[in-house]
Image (cartoon, rainbow, N blue to C red):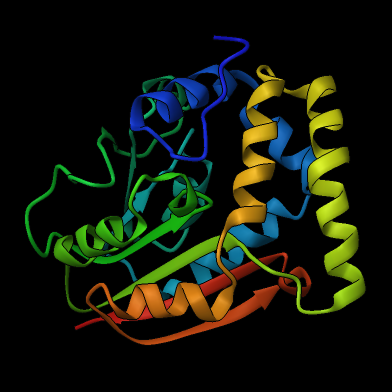
Length: 230
C-alpha cells in the first residue's frame, strides 16, 4: 500500500486504499504540512456548528477521528464515519463512536443528526453533490452543516506562493514524514482542482441546504462553508 495514490476521477476503492496507506502517520503529517494550523481549523469547525450537550453530530470523512474528538468537546455525541477502514483502525483508541460508511450511501436513517460536518473530505468523494444530499438526508430540518475544506486564497501573492507550495514543497515534505508520500501528490492536485468559495457555495445550495455562507481561514487557504437544512 505504500505506493498507492488515487487519480482525480476519485474511484472510491482507489481513494479508500490510498487513505489506508497514509493512516499510520496521517495526523502527524497533517500537522507538519499545515504548520500546526490544523488544530485551529478543527476548533473553528466545532465553534461554527454551535453544538450543545445532548445533540448528535455526524463527522463524515473523519479519518482517525481527531476531528470527532474535537467536536465531542462541545458535549454533543459526535459520530465518526469514514470509508477507509485503515483510518478508523488507526484511531480506534479514541473514545468516540466509529462507523464505516460511504459518503454517497450513508448508513444512517433519515434525520438522525442535529448537525453534520465534513472536513477536508468532500473533494475526495466521486460526487460531491450526492454526498451533500446524503448529509441533508440524515440531518433534521433546521440542522446545521459545516464544510471545512481547502479553498482559494483571496490575496494574489499568497495564492501564488500557496500553489507553488502545494505542487513542489508539499510532496517533498511528505516524503520525509508520510507513510505513503505518493498520496500527497494526489492530495496537492485535488486541492488545486477544487472549486473556489462561491462555486462550492452554489453546489451546497443546490443539494438541499439554505442560508449558505462562508468564512475564510488562513487567508482563504481553508474556507468554512456553513448552511442550514431545508
